[in-house]
Length: 173
Image (cartoon, rainbow, N blue to C red):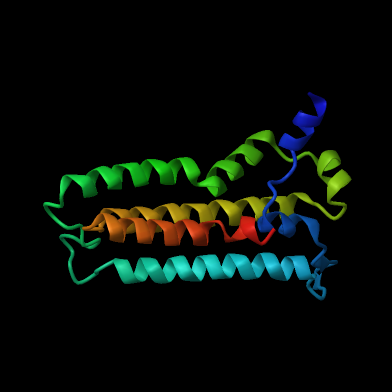
């Protein structure tokens, strides 16, 4: 039971946890970045840039009445698939849930430093904020792509693509 409690206070096993485990600042001077920090930053940038490009491509600022280009009168199978995709998105979005869970458990310097000897509160917050913001961006883009689909095939392709991008940090860990 104590081991399970200890795991709850550690960071999730993804590349965002690398932000808490490296020493990239010392006395205000930037050191040579470690490979794990570069990996985490690279994954985050790929995720943010890809999702931002998707969002920019989806939003139609020329159409103020329907900026997401939600198609009217789609078939019932498409609506049902949209609802299911939204539910799956909310359930499978790990980044937001994990960030809030770790935040609720709080920063435990003794426990974190036992695993990550260079962990600190600012790095811990940076890791959580990065994970949370990318998760929120993923939810927003997924929602935009789901509501504008007019066929089940398009919906599933878009949904799968965003889910893949959202889980890059887990796969590269």
